Amino acid sequence: SPPVLNRFQALRQLLLSPDLSFLMEAHNGLSAKIVEETGFQGIWASGLSISASLGVRDNNEASWTQFLEVLEFMADATSIPMLVDGDTGFGNFNNVRRLVRKLCDRGVAGVCIEDKLFPKTNSFIGDHQPLADMEEFCGRIRAGKDSQTNDDFSIVARVEALIAGQGMDEALRRAEAYHAAGADAILIHSKRSSAAEILSFMEHWGQRCPVVIVPTMYYATPTEAFREAGVSTVIWANHNIRAAISAMRDVTGRIHREQSLAGLERDLPTVKDIFRLTGQDELNEAEKRYLPVR
Ligand code: SPV
Ligand code: MG
Image (cartoon, rainbow, N blue to C red):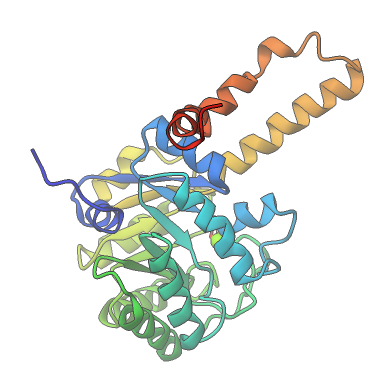
């Protein structure tokens, strides 16, 4: 049987394996558990989703340590690897160094950093987002790689050139520079409703290193097209927070209208299900072992 991989090795393998892999968004410990028990091999800890779940904007309004607290709950709640959305790295190379060390400490298998400036703006907002200087961003990648305290920690460099309207040549130039700076994979992002520019990037890039994509806006593209293009990993980036919003609106609206729980109960997971998800049984067993018998 194959050797059991730790989480750092598992993410590395997911990125390097020739098969198409998938990361599913989660934004807290509970959603991370649901992603794991559904059978996903890895978690995307989305900045947008975690921010939204805290009721703030995806503009680094939550501090990086507040973000880290959420990530710690997510990592503790699961055993599959997590790729964390590290936004810009929360500053310059020095902030990236501290971030990477803390993520390694907490069992987070990898971080994605994007070539923009702190405080970041979500890629789907506005037209002309300023990009980081390419050399400066390479320094952030090198500093991150030099700071990882686990050899198998991964840094994914996210290229925002297409988002910023700077064209394919600039996207390829930056991807090449970030790869040379030591990035373990490139995330190429697009806000188009067609995957054409992503597929074109794949063609030009070849297989120089693993490529990660986020088909939020080109959602109608068949997954087979990504497989055929040689994409390493697809991130389903925000679909649990969006599902949570519709589920919460639905139940809150019904209770508000009906002023009763009678018609609702059978449509919801039971309280027992919550106990199961959070491992209540384990505590009951532990109490037998550790509490004095009275
Ligand atoms: C996120 O999920 O926070 C991402 C992906 O970074 S996106 O929202 O498409 O920028
Ligand atoms: Mg993000």
